[in-house]
Amino acid sequence: QLQLVESGGGLVQPGGSLRLSCAAPDSTLDYHAIGWFRQAPGKEREGISCFSTSDGSTYYSDSVKGRFTTGRDNAKKTVYLQMNSLKPEDTAVYYCAAAPWDRYVFCSGDVSYESWGQGTQVTVSE
Image 1 (tube, rainbow, N blue to C red):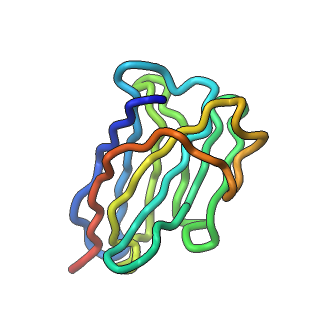
Image 2: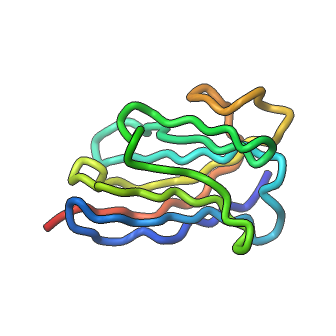
């Protein structure tokens, strides 16, 4: 399993943007699916995106499609989640997760992840 660390959370006004990053300080994210999840208070955890470092394929949930983008920052050796047009309902703790190449065929909402980060808080408010 990988040790994953998220960064980039914070407070932003509605309509604003934030960029989250997911890093594996002691390893590499090569040949993994990296998923982003979020959990708001009193709600179930929601899978919102997936990025495959193997082939660059992506997946987005309907709730974020068109507003969020995920990809790889090769210089920083991280996978990012670029969040634009943020809404108050995007407020949640955001987690990244990783699945090795042999545990998925392509990015989707059904990837089985085995490594998880500790999460970073995103608050969208005036």
